[in-house]
Length: 262
Ligand SMILES: [Zn+2]
Image (tube, rainbow, N blue to C red; front, side):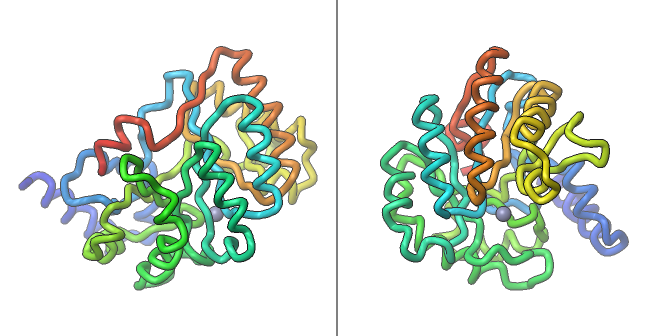
């Protein structure tokens, strides 16, 4: 406990002196096991998948008309995934929400409007609003998961959220291992679907980026966005390739390291 306090003090000083502290935190911080957190003070980075040839698929920013295409691919391959939704997108899409739930996937919280939480002192309203939209879809033996838009977070948010009983049930913010960026040199080291489509990469090139990064890390949390039909096409190719390489798929919330944070 004392060590932990020292650690927190060290982090606080980092924040005070270094505007890039959250980047250091992202690369070094790992709050798994810290006892004061449900919402963690930093992104949850290590869920134990790297090096294990296991992948956890996650889809952000839906639901949209693309979500059903993604569900078709997941059903075809027998894979369960996590959908981090933006509450504003659920209007008129109740049947898609129902389908995500009924097909065995987990609905999770990605805030109401995808605002950058690093630039606000009030993280509660954006997260609480989306909680109202997913709470009836998460079973009592499942986990409320949260991912911050852009991965942007502030350590001071955790205490504010954990003070509210319904939100203190959450685990997060959960980061990702694969799918975060596309390098300047192309897809040799990895890709991100939104960047692929905006830069005009083909489905096969983008798939190769995801495959390359997955093989290099030998497993992890994979980030996709169910907002563009090309992502659904890529997903089918990606899953087929990874299965051929001996990889298996797990639903993120079932991992022991996630369960330990509850
Ligand atoms: Zn997002």
